[in-house]
Length: 303
Image 1 (cartoon, helix red, strand yellow):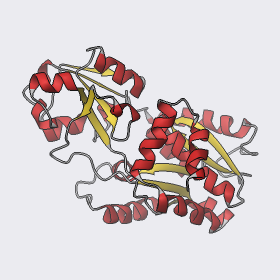
Image 2 (cartoon, rainbow, N blue to C red):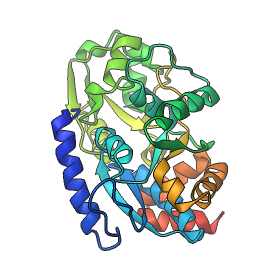
Image 3 (cartoon, helix red, strand yellow):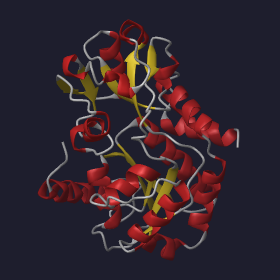
Image 4 (cartoon, rainbow, N blue to C red):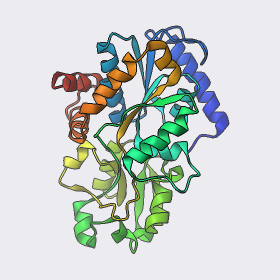
């Protein structure tokens, strides 16, 4: 569930201690103290951790000092951490970042270039610089087993409407509060599931699907486990999910301190990062047991 504001402040206070005491995180004591490194922070799921390693390596190659803090938390924690100066760089997803930045807006654009422009204007006033988006994209996807799809004749999310009241849906704990997750499924598709179960990880989601413990599960569209022929994504036929191009968000004060070399290095990664790259990065981490840093190093070897 989404943390209450007081909970977020408590997490940020803890994060200040973690970042400040980390062996390679510099002498950070408060959000306004200049850090001795550029602090990259990742969300609490593997793909984002790998992406952070890819982009952090670009900064290192440009001769910039870098520290990485993995698994900082969900968006409700990481976004305030960036805006309050606890961290300097977050690798985000265009559509979700925009929806989070403007939660009450009803007229958000759907064209990626326009989405990017609105996000730049919105976060620019909050001390965050939005860099170039990558061609690489990863959206929320909703999966079932091939056996379930064949038995019930479903291929699209809209096909679930007549069945939803009898189905169990598995997703991350924050899904009930995210407009592109459960609320979006209810509003756009009329899907009101019999039961919603919180899944601790994407791996647990797949295991629960295959075991018949859940009927529908949230998996990202670049999830390596989708190579399993027993798992298939349903078509988002009503366009619930926006464009989700990978986009770096950088604290403007960090750009001012470290100079144009920082955005230049990160934009260079975005220029070359593809959706196929994302799938391959996820595969070597999730299925081949490479660490996120090792997967990032392999990506750099090929680029």
